[in-house]
Amino acid sequence: MTNSAVIRPAERTDMAACAGILNRWIDATPWMPRVHDHADVEHYYADTVFAERRVLLAEDAGKIAGFLSLSDDHHVTALYVDASHRGAGIGTRLIEAAKALSPDELSLWTFEHNREAQLFYEHQGFEVVRRTDGDNEEQLPDILYRWRTKEIQA
Figure 1 (cartoon, rainbow, N blue to C red):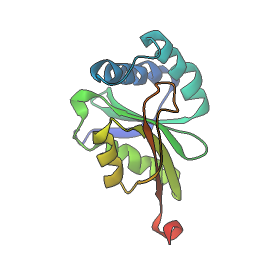
Figure 2 (tube, one colour; figure 1 turned 90 degrees about the vertical axis):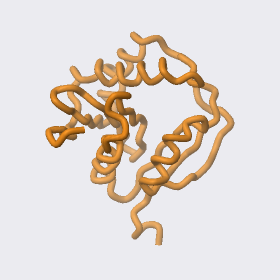
Figure 3 (cartoon, rainbow, N blue to C red; figure 1 turned 45 degrees about the vertical axis):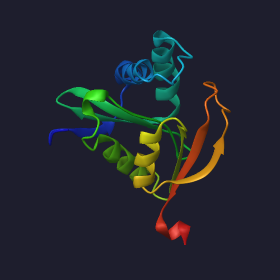
Figure 4 (cartoon, one colour; figure 1 turned 30 degrees about the vertical axis):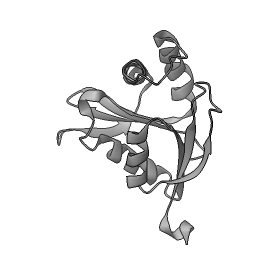
């Protein structure tokens, strides 16, 4: 990510690019089942995610490099970084922006198979709250994580 990259609120017209990042991730992840086709994911992001959540983008040289969606109850419902931008600090910057919007606590789910994400979230200060054996539409085991400020943890 270059110094010109910015974190900004998404606009509805950005949702196709966000859905594209998610769709590419699903297509490239062997253990992840495709539950919804590409068009359904795009419609969901435009009609539901954008309407119901705060969506933050990382934009680099005019291209959307990653995004995070945050619900009103401080739950990160999505965090994806496009493959060509991974490892450049974009996920960290998006989580920092979410922490600024929800300074007391955040929660999120990640799949048990996604060890890379688990390491990332643990590095960001998230702790495991509970695990399920597949209580989601993908029917994959997952993990609920929570981050809290030090003041709340004490």
